[in-house]
Image 1: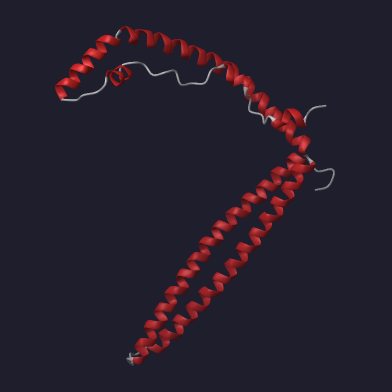
Image 2: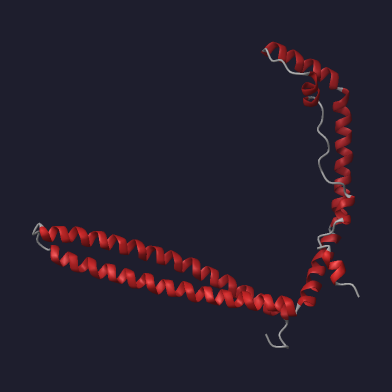
Amino acid sequence: MDGTTDPLIRRHELLAEIRAARVAIDMTRSKQADAVHRQKKAKAEGFEAEMDVVRRIDGAEQRVKEAAEREHTAAADEERYDVGVQAAGQVMKLAEGEMKVLYEKGLSSFIAEAERKTDSALKRAGPVRKALADYRQAWSEAEAHWQQLLHALVARVEAADLAEGRRRDSTTVYRECQVPMFGVQTSDELLARPPRPPAIARLTEK
């Protein structure tokens, strides 16, 4: 990377190279696996043809020759695809190496970009805080209504248990008849813990 290259643009280019290399590796490995399969199949067919030669079956020698050719072609394909996988892997390795250097040298640019994303996330926290507060209030109202029915519900469940021949302790029955605890994090935590590594505060101190 020269001094005039925008690190954000270069990262985009490197990521594209890495993705392309991964796709190439996956496709080539699939073709390589097919070549291995063809090679094994041709070898088996060649062995069968050789047995037919021993049995003096007409055309067996020609089939041996053709199977050998198919096996040779498949082996050559496997080797060629292996070279392709290695080449794509080298491209990906070089791009990942440059990416590591890019992050080190252009860290300030990437931090600024990440901070913009963090600010954008925090701007969206306000509506979430309100929605969460509304939900908590609605939850409490529903819980209050269910709480009024607690003893009646317990009596109904105990009667059902008795009819079914079930024996359970009262704590279990009461828990089953109560609204569970509100399990969502408090809204204050949404802003108290922004999506930013704690170390950034120290790294960006002036």
